[in-house]
Amino acid sequence: MKRLIKPVFFGVIAATTVISAWAGNPQRTGAAGAAELLINPFARTSGWASSNVAGASGVESMFMNVAGLSRVNKTELVFSNTQWLVSSGISINNFGFGQRVGSAGVLGINITSFDYGEWEITTENQPEGNGATISPSSLIIGLSYAQKFTENIYGGVNIKMYSSSTTNISTVGVCFDAGIQYITGDRDQWKFGVTLKNVGPGLTYRGDGMTVVLPVPTFGTTYSQVFENRTAQFELPTQLGLGLGYDFKLGEMSRLTVAGTFLSNSFEKDLYNLGVEYGFKTFFMVRAGYSLVDNRFDNTRTTALTGFTGGFSFDIPLGKQSKSSFGIDYSYRSTNPFAGVHNVGVRINI
Image (cartoon, rainbow, N blue to C red; front, side, top):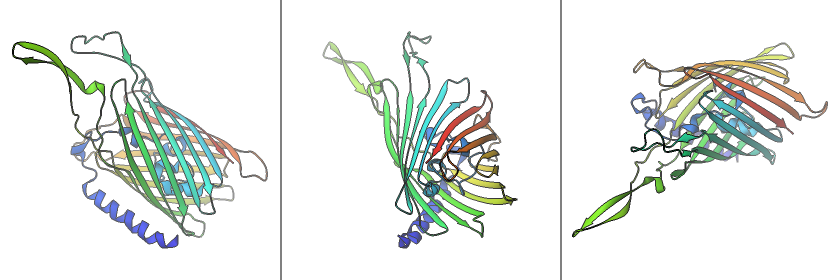
């Protein structure tokens, strides 16, 4: 397996070089679809602005950098609920599971469900609504594998299925993530990470909602026929992440971690995410972060997220000699408009 290290490493570097050549183009903002793929559904990593691409570990790594999944101890489960843009009626439910297989590998599965609430149906003839409603939804299912290649190098791949649907129209597609982490230092305090996310073919919407009934005149007789409208193909929001982190040891029981990540988006403005986390042993952690949007092109804010994030975690050991624990996570992301984003998660390590 060690022979795969160089091909995987240089493969990711080559891919990121190509992506960075056309990424971060603000003129293409909003041109992609499947924006749900860019939303972090986990409480811990979102609490410090998703800045920990270099050092993320465990189940949450399936979103941040799948390489960190390889550091699951044995079995880890995470449940979380996100109230997205509070007062908008959008909620996100997420389940993640990681299981060690063998001495170096970890398998993971992650399911994220988006509920947009009910929308009233309006038409050209009934702009005030016809009394009926629709309930759009989206689903992301990810299957991951990560492995520790050497004492310092970790790598992984995540294959994701994305689907979005409403009453009479839907789309389904597949994409993948890949990531590498390099951790070094006499206390493993230096962390470096590279991840490439949401790489896949374009998608189109299909269904009865794309049909229209039109009259067809023929030699004095008119009849109606159903025609199908073909939708334009939309691209996935491919993203490249480069991260750096460092752990400061504060005595025997505490640590302070600072992290930074540059996110280059193919259909959005680039992001500079900075975060800090204080941990007392493994029992309590508090974190904060800021996400800075590169607005140099037009000096215009194009997202409801205003940048500041914060959160905390409690981990309760389930035995004196056991590594099993039960944890509660919370994060907040500030927005304007709406009343922020609240995320609550429960974590079980066995």
